[in-house]
Amino acid sequence: MIEVKDLWYKYPGEERYVVRGVTFSFKEGILSITGPNGSGKTTLLKLIAGLLKPARGSVIIGGRDMWSLTERDRTMLRREIVYVHEKPVLFRGTVIENVSYPLKLRGYDKGYRLTRATKVLRLLGIEGIAHEKVRNLSAGQAQLVSIARAMVIEPKCLLLDEPTSNLDARHKDLLLRLLRGFAQKGTLVLIASHERSALRIASQALLLRDGTMAFYGNPIEAQEVLHEIYG
Image (cartoon, rainbow, N blue to C red):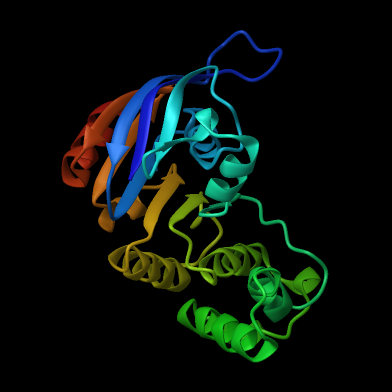
């Protein structure tokens, strides 16, 4: 369970708060965080992931207040959360090496690593590029590889920033179906996007506007609110 209580944040040197008084709780399934560019979606995800410390308020995950923990315990909690940036950061080498790397860090043997990584790549429809050098990938392929690398360890919380922005219709549908399957197995999935496609699979929807919550609740109702606000 994720609880966000009266969350505020502004970047160093800035006067304006980019997240202002956001409060919600999310127990299971998929949360779609929607809003236009500059509404605070990315900042909110980073706050939940523990990558940014709030100026005010708290982030509680599984009953543990992120910033009340010792540094050691906070590091342990962060390992349960995977944040995937909108712009993928991949290391030099092949796709399969990138995707299997988190399993290597966790001590799994090579056979298991390759089997598990290949399975995730197949589910995303990109098993054909498993041995391709990452420097040769398109923007959409790189995006899918970074998501595969996050999924391969089956984290308790998966936070995705604009995950469908560079994808064609086929891979977008594959990804959304796969995320729904992950959520059904118990992973909390948070998707931040200015697109509305994630609302199709979401169990809850959060709409941001100028850093504040414009709506939190049923995704169908969220569609109506979006139409009223943005057309």
